[in-house]
Amino acid sequence: MNRKNILTRLMAIVLFSALLGGCSQQSIEKESLATEQSVTEEPERSVLVTAEEEPESGQKETLQGNSESDAEDEPLTDVEEKSEEDEEDEEDEEDEEFDEFESEFEEAKQEVSDPLEGYNRAMTTFNDKLYFWVLNPIAGGYRFIIPEAPRRGVRNFFHNLLYPLRFVNNLLQFKIANAGEETLRFVTNSTIGILGLWDPAKEWFDMRPHEEDFGQTLGFYGLGSGPHIVLPFFGPSNLRDTFSMVPDNYLDPTGQRKPLGQTESYEAEYGLLAIKTINKVSLRPGEYESLKKDAVDFYPFLRDSYEQMRNKQIKE
Image (cartoon, rainbow, N blue to C red; front, side):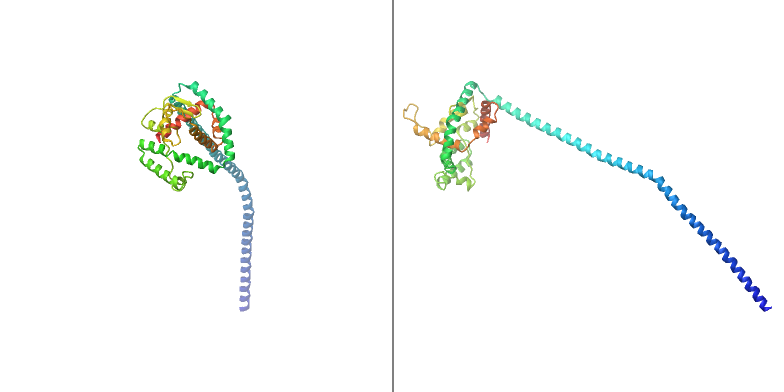
């Protein structure tokens, strides 16, 4: 009995374990099939999803491209607008500057009294021919023979001699400091500068000359320039400055001081004047030519330039 019971129990255990093994295999097979189906379905879904999303991404790219092109176009239009505005502003500024220059030139033309224009034009032509036919060739030969350093020494020497003219007219205009500095300049250049041949007052001590004449003094006290006059040999002037040449001549150590009725010759005075003029022209080669080249109508250009220069000197 005991053996039969043991055998029956063993058979029951074997059958039960076999049943359990079959069930577990079926469940495993079902799970494997499910996993295989899920694996196969997932790529299909991914392919479908990518296929569906591709046009959307393309649309996004096109939208992005359009937005980028729009963004690029917008600043370009802004830059173009700004550049156009800048160009317009520059043109407006240039027009304003030209209008201001033109108005100043017109005012200068209106202020100049020129009842002797016919005579002045003829005398300007005379002085022009005198320059090109006589003065410029002589100055060219003088410049070729004499080196620049001695010519500058000659200029400094004659300028130093004009100290009384500058000193007196500075005092008459109550420019006391300028008169004192002119005195220091004269003493320094006459001693260290060897009679004014050199200008150590300017080069060493930065003492610059204060150019004043009797015409500027009269203008300082309110006297007008009067009608414009072109003098032979001397060039542009006016009634006030022409009258001022008399006292200026007496304050110039090289000037003419003989009475009007005296019959002595003026060879020495004219000789010094010729040397000063030729030396001055030799130190400024081509200056007159360039001035004439830039002028449309030379006479009014000279006239207005002279009057503006004198007015500026009086105001300083």
